[in-house]
Length: 205
Image (tube, rainbow, N blue to C red; front, top):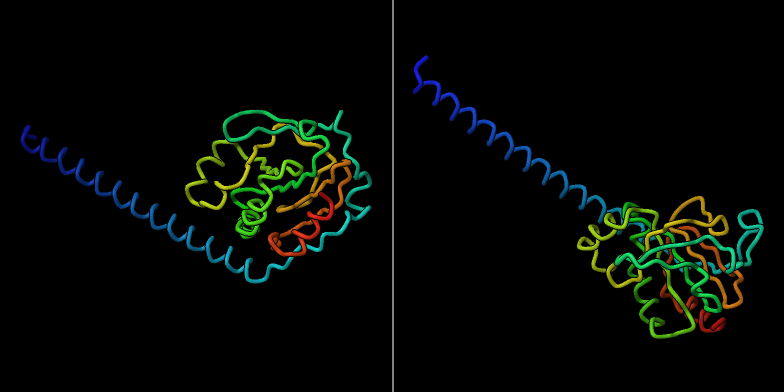
């Protein structure tokens, strides 16, 4: 085979591989767009049926102990800058604790109402909002550009969990009063900026 023909074959192979790579890229991009579209539809469907939380005390079957011992509690977490915290850092505060994940559409569905609630209290020194995820910190950071809502909330990555706040599913939200009593455990998506929630928080602050 002549060098000319060999070079021609190599060029054609490079062109073919480049074309296949481009087609694979386009397919991956289209699949990602469809995935995002599906997720947005799923989130909208959840939002359409959400209701305000019931704000009930935890069921004794779910939580036999509801008083936080801040001196021995093992719940530790870090913010998206890597600064570490422990629940004991917020002793004496009312705590609003939400367990969530970037892959959880029901979690994402309630976040807009979470933002509105948080914005009403973010300057109140007596209440602390903690949005906790077990995901890798970089996973959370990489997801933020997809959802501007989340970037408005104080997000944390769990370092070590505590059995007191164990939950069978997410989203799960706990409200702890200033004495350390877990006064609310709510599992599932809810409308958290409802007036009933505001009245409840105002009453315990």
